[in-house]
Image (cartoon, rainbow, N blue to C red; front, side, top):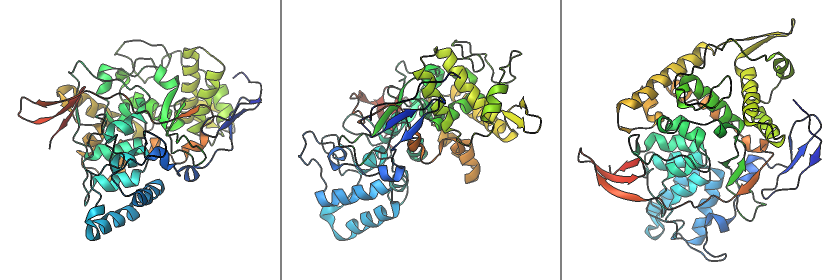
Length: 433
């Protein structure tokens, strides 16, 4: 790996600065921890058309109190407050039809979604509250869309478990992710990839990911434009094991192609020489965040895309598919463990079932239909890979951005041949009940 001359870049909008030392590694300086970052500015949370205006159907003091609870992601406090309001003060009752952001028609569930308040989202969409997880805002974005766009898989999974949304792969208007969302779509809506296979650029290109914001950031940044974060890189590579045909690149060469017959294993005869990589990183304790750092470095070096991908892939292979013998300093390349391989086979079977129907449920619900113990269900949705806390403190390169309102999506009412009624947004069908 080439080295880079050390320098300090300017502090960007979200309060980061980046130091690139001579070793070629990237280290964050002055990065706030996730807990410190959960404080938001009321100005952006209210999404005011003009600074200083108050645009909510909720009493201002109550609004601020609820937002503080959401920032802490404290479902117990939120439940007690909602129950108390329902029992004692009908004028302040908070329901799913109460707009916290009036002009955008966003309720508390929308607010909790783009605040990454996973536990609060779980509270609202489950009994006793049972809020509609598919409720559309003023731009016809539902919480599923908001979480998927931000690659916030923790929130997305909570919504996906209760969502009625189904997707039509035969529709001529199957959407592709715009800002981000590639790992989220690949995990939760793999049938989308039958139409739009995941490209190599999704792994090495600059994307948006949802962040928790900063009390020191008056603009209220809720997204960060940077390389794909480490846990999501690891997730996408792991998903490749199950369904290589859903990807538009070859894992072992990095070449882009439309060949649907590619395989993950066995390794081709010209397998990569990873000896130097394995020796250098055998003691690495920063996986999967090292995947993010190496991706940033190769971009800053302006290496060719195929080479950048191969370097990133080699780092993942080093951590997940190799064994190292310290005494002899020898290494070997081995297939995934039996548990990982079994998970891949189950996912392959479930994803292939999606070809048999038009309107499809999401992958989280397909796994739930197997009726397995919670630990197995979590393993089958790859929670051990993507559910990594405090990943924000490893962000070192990029810039913050407000959560884009996005374009207003065209929604129309339809009646299916079965007589079922609902709303169609692109290839996404949301039934009335």
